[in-house]
Length: 126
Image (cartoon, rainbow, N blue to C red; front, side, top):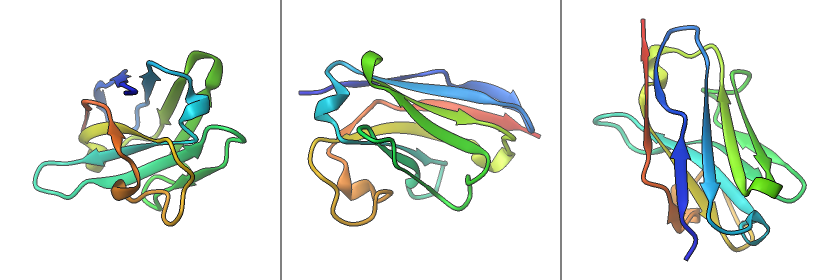
């Protein structure tokens, strides 16, 4: 069973940057798709960004396009989320997710991903 561990969260002022990391305890070669989701209090979980670990194709939510970048280091079995120009509305618990099978359908649907990390808090103050 693959385990995912997020790190790098914290508090930052609006306009600032944070980088989240998601380390898998196995090779990302066996995890062809990995993604970041977030959930703010009282809101549904939403997909933020996803990446195909072999080849590097990506998908982003409209709300983060141009500000967030998802990337991977397969040698380290780690996926990153670089978050720039952060806004208070980016405040949420951020979750890493992984899929061991090929993707059919929307990359940013939470129902595609059977494996999840425990989540990490990101707080952006105005």
